[in-house]
Image (cartoon, rainbow, N blue to C red; front, side, top):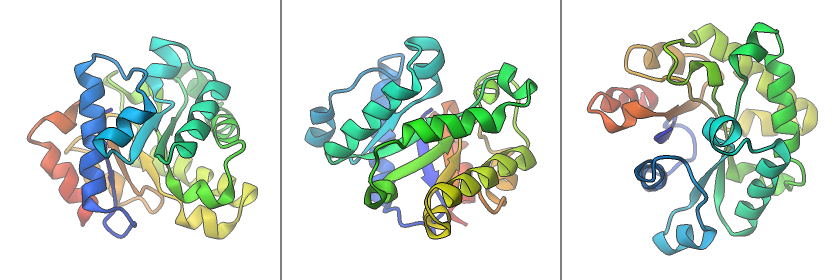
Length: 210
């Protein structure tokens, strides 16, 4: 993934978006989203860190939900905001286990997080099967999962927290599908991959700012 965008009505400052992008470019230069020293983020004035990315969960080091949770807690303790990634594989979706997987990843990933810190976490749903595979989640599929995520947050915390939470989508977001995706009521923005390094990325930015 390369860049995080949220709707303009959400409480994100423009400078924050730019700083998040710097974090991802730094990681892309290193080929994979690797282990970054928390003190380095503070040194560069970067307020966000990416935790639980699909590459870390499934291809680089097979990170467990518990390890992702430990990183979430450590990042918050260090004063960073967190973009928490989660999502199902193709096999899990085809087995109709999407929400079972998503809810488990969220349940463990948010364990021990104080309610007062939930506003420092951006939730990024990224279906693994739709990342660089040529397959795309339809806007309806993305909305279905995002709506279920809010139901999960309502049950676990409250309707107010579920409504205020920023839930973004990441899965082959590009100019040809971003407009329809951002129209979904529970899709607050995007976690964008390779397209964030191309001129067409400006079209995605425009869709998220409308």
